[in-house]
Image 1 (cartoon, rainbow, N blue to C red):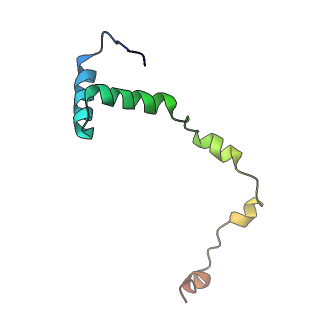
Image 2: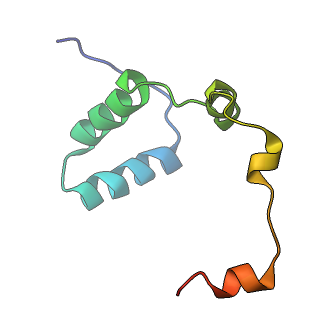
Image 3: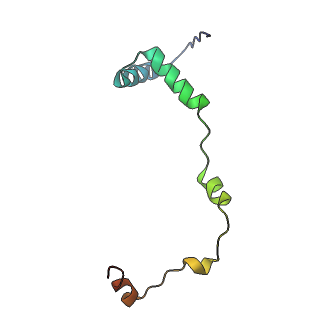
Length: 78
């Protein structure tokens, strides 16, 4: 396993790392490994636009139109 040395890290980042590591009950080194692993080894998140574009075309727009009929709404819970 390799070692990694990062120089010039801002003090605010170091303090945030200490706080986060303490909240998770682990060392700063273990917390940093977890952060790197989550950032670099997790599958990339897909954009909402890509997910919507990948949805199959099912039906026509009229199938999804609202029908504002008070009598039909009153019968919903009968």
